[in-house]
Length: 90
Image 1 (cartoon, rainbow, N blue to C red):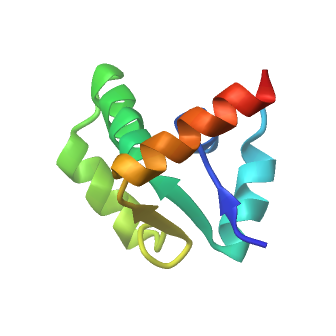
Image 2 (cartoon, rainbow, N blue to C red; image 1 turned 60 degrees about the horizontal axis):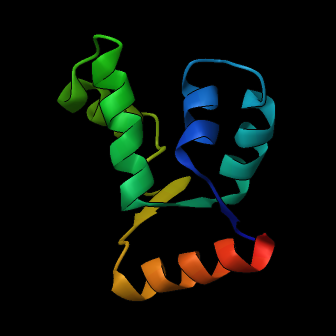
């Protein structure tokens, strides 16, 4: 089963916070993340003083981008599906 990570999960992994071990397991099996969430991750990296291009390259060098984590587009159809999920979970 493919795991879909949100920004907070991947940030926990990157900054070795609580829950990082669970994300490590998900990444080993191959995980997905929307481009919107990946943008949030990169913004947080920049917010903490990191260089976005260097950070992206470091992730790629570690095999995280493409091999263990695939960033997928977030389009209008997915936005509508996400909104339906939010409504259904209330």
